[in-house]
Image (cartoon, rainbow, N blue to C red; front, top):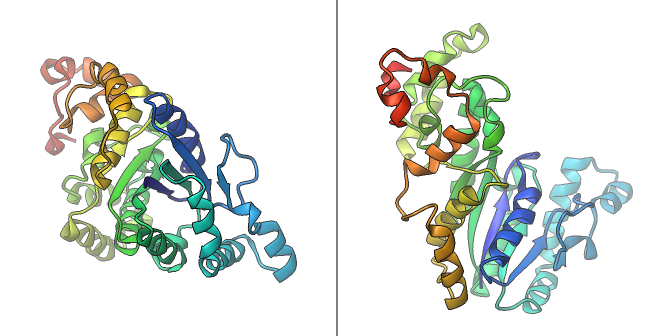
Amino acid sequence: MFGQLVIGPPGSGKTTYCAGMVQFLSGFGRQVAVVNLDPANEILPYKADIDISDLITISDVMDTLKLGPNGGLVYCMEYLEKNIDWLKKELEKVEGKYLLIDCPGQVELYTHNNAVRNIVSELMKMDVRLVSVHLVDSHYCSDASKFISVLLTSLSTMLQMALPHVNVLSKCDLIEKYGKLAFNIDFYTEVLDLSYILDELKEDQDFHKYKKLNAALVDIVQDYSLVSFVPLVVEDKESMLRVMQVVDKANGYVFGDLEERNLQQLLSCAAGADFEYEKIQNIREKYMDTEEKLSDDSGAERDSGEKIDVDNG
């Protein structure tokens, strides 16, 4: 069995992603089973084939053990870990289907708590081949300090989960909602020279006094050289196709005949598997303000859509 472990901070769009992806994959003829592992997710926009609420709910935990939301989520995941046989039996009922596993949004579960990692290890023993799809809200790109935090969280999650991993910038249609980006979007998706992020922080007096700490954190991210992002707009078919291709490549999913025929119809609008530039061109043209690019005196790269040199901001 193949599938996606959909993780990320609260509000990053995990449940929306699962609802959109199940419709998208079903359109290719892929049989999908959705697994809700978020005990706090009471209103679901999709039909869950497996729901953790049949085993435990966070409301019961909080009422019985007098725990807060965060402690309740940790308890629920550790309870699921101890009762992993329940999940294994439920998965046997959907054997042969592609899994979309919607996980809780508590970051600690993926950075240093071992419950989710141990659950995944048990599923791997069943020959369930998962890839972590880590969603983060794209609006963090508009704030240099928040973007560094996102990079560290993504890196820590990659190391902790020990799975094939795809980082996704979600809600890219709203990427400039909180202000214009300091650099081109490919600077953030490809995580280019982060020394420019440090230059941005110099303008913030609250963070400038921690410049050595910030420099050390940036060096950690760059030394590992693991973090990059795929931009996503759930309502955009081309964007969903690109995410699907990256995820399928990460866990080695092999297309079936029916799905391959359906896929060819959509590949005409997103040709090729190696689309490092194309994957961000669509986002920039559709959802970002390009007025300044069009009014530039040179006009050359603005009209052609070529990359903006990071040295020029």
